[in-house]
Image: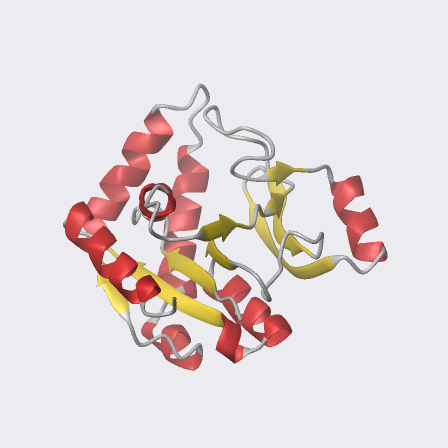
Length: 195
């Protein structure tokens, strides 16, 4: 049976870059699960690649028809943004392994839906000051930087990924991303144990 490897960590810890690097490793037969969101796309994002970008009305229709596995809603300075996973036949655990990026909350909801044996947490850590600098650098590159939202998300992550919440979610393995290549190799080594 396949596994869902869930990359998690606070914003700007390097999840997206690690995700792309791990997926580029041809020795790992990993598939992706494209998540859904109602937030606007960032400048460098493409619909159907990083996310499926939907309207609130489209999300509500999926919810009404029972297709949403898990959903998280965040009150941002720009309105309520929803992130969710849809039971849209992207997932075939009988034949495939998957790599996804998630939050602690999405990991727990997916684990509850599919079962504990099918979800493998991969928690990424990075020194707080470095994380904040990366987030600021990324936001500066946007056509319309949203610095207030960056600050809100940064502070929310401190609470969401608290030591207590990590313990409640039974997250015991951590990958420190202060050396990108080493961190990537460590994660790949863990993933390979399941093949």
